[in-house]
Image (cartoon, rainbow, N blue to C red; front, side, top):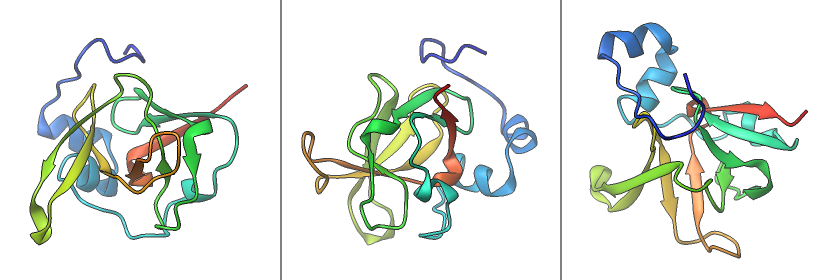
Amino acid sequence: MPSDNTTRVQKTDEEWRRELTPEQYRVLRQHGTERAGTSPLNDEHRKGIFRCAGCGAPLFDSSTKYDSGSGWPSFYKPLPGAVATQVDTSHFMTRTEVHCAKCGGHLGHVFPDGPRPTGERYCMNGVALEFEPEE
């Protein structure tokens, strides 16, 4: 499977269930949220790329990761064309939901309270990501 975002990944629900862990399926395919502070990626500080756990598409460069204090891996900017957003009105609030542009997997939400230069906080579920260290 190509690692760029040029080809949209389409799988049946059963294929996703077979390929993902139950927690990955709950977050990526059912718009779930992992418990804050549970992802080992919170403590990942090496250089590399954060990829979609569903399809492997590159999403964030490690240089844009920062500690937001939220309990989830946070970034101030995705890679170009890596994510798509939509309005989420669940849980009695309005937020901007973030999806992988390649497979449509739910990653988390973006908020307007991040650091410079973008002012955005991409608050991602760690279970929806995989880290590939720079060689």
